[in-house]
Image 1: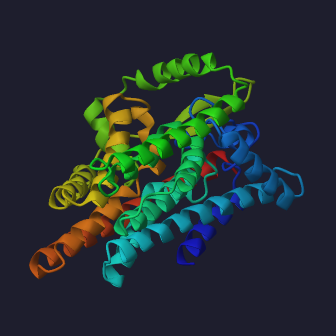
Image 2: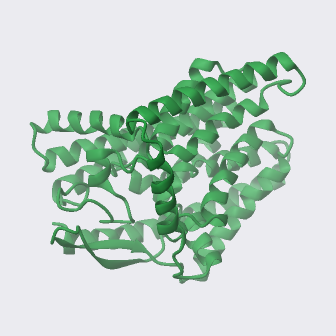
Image 3: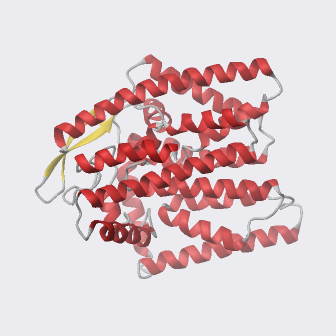
Length: 399
């Protein structure tokens, strides 16, 4: 309820006073490279978001029903509140993981979700109708569900695996692999041929259902997948704007949590309408780089300390998957902050496991608490300041 209220006030104000959430003339890139209009109307490109078309048909039709068939303020407000609900429910899943799986004290769990709640990704997605918004929710639900099953030493049922594969992979195809990661950590899966065979069957069933629905979506014209995928990779992986290490720190790791400064760009919709876009710049302050490096050090510390914990390994392998795609393969690295909905939940969970690892060592625990409180304070001050810049952009170009 707290986050519904906070995000709701923000999203409601933006929806009622500005047209940036949805403007039928602006299909993409109004702010931070999000494709609001294109996503709401079509679900996005089929090669990256194969089944999002069906999901956003429901989102669009429901929003039109509420707005009386008009795509103005009420339509934008409905889209914003659906995003608000999705991000708020995501935070509930993170809290449940911290409290029920890691079993942290209530105050530490609440503090970590509050910390997560002021990440730049959480703030922006709370009013943004995008695939990443709903992918974030689904990944958090699935990670919690899988953790419950593994803690009880139970296997993930084929029905649940298939549902997760279709919904999570359907919204963004690269996340399909993340659905299978918890299966690798089921008890004795590599020691029993029966359990291994059952796991192969469940993974095969999920893959078959997903592939069938994917091909059905494109009328079985599978050759389009390869040509479009190659085009997208070439388009989004060959940008040479700033050094890779800076893009990794400022955009992939940093921009998804701590807002940098912004820059405006000139855009057009290829139909004669010109508009302004907003992008993130690389960090220009040593304090911002320090913040990200310290946070990454805590995350790495948590991973090493809990190396033998299979639940931590699941989170880490999932995160590594995104690191490979965006940092090593360089796909979309220059705007990698928009993909944070695929991995940003990793931070509060790994911080939670770090607190858990030192629960019986008061001195180290106190050090961790003080460190995260300092990070929280800087994050809150910085992101509030940068949101004022965002509103200045809205006042100038999107009233």
